[in-house]
Image (cartoon, rainbow, N blue to C red; front, side, top):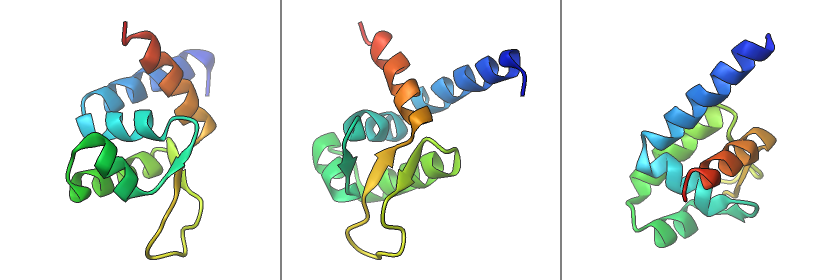
Length: 95
């Protein structure tokens, strides 16, 4: 992938996150930590289905990953390196 394509993909992912309040909340609430979906629900005030769907979407795009995929309950999610770069950019535009 060329640098131009890489930058286009980066900005495409920023838009992908910003267009969905649930995806934006997930990335921002997880931040540098790891969180369970129920913790994200409590902090965001959103419904569990919204957060679960958002986490699935973010995982498919390589923005977050699950630390304990085999667990049915108590799954922990963390931002990937890409997710952290996207978060850094999202935090810049917050001002």
